[in-house]
Length: 114
Image (cartoon, rainbow, N blue to C red; front, side, top):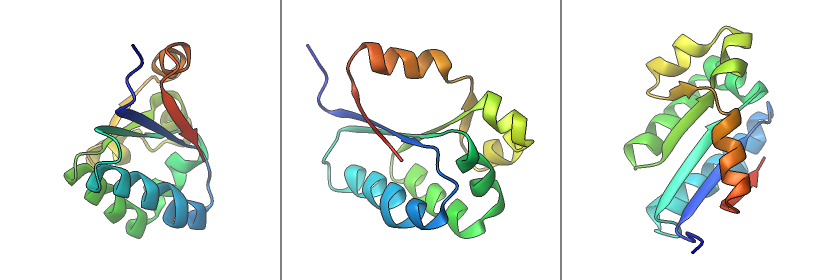
């Protein structure tokens, strides 16, 4: 049976406005308003570099984590940008995400991308 209470948000954009006005707003509200029981934000690609450089975005992510959103980042991407340690210091799980993302897709779990 498909788990409809679980949402993954794949954030790949380096656009700050997309992060603030869509990704972060929907992800946090999904958890705070109980639209989804489990919410995971996946930081992938250019979003990893943007997050590592932007203190305001970091504060938003810290609020998400404290609200119960699970935040993960792609290790290959973060290593490529040289930001893995910075993301880990923010409380983000930095790990290889190829297999986990493939499982999300194969299991037809709910996934939105930005």
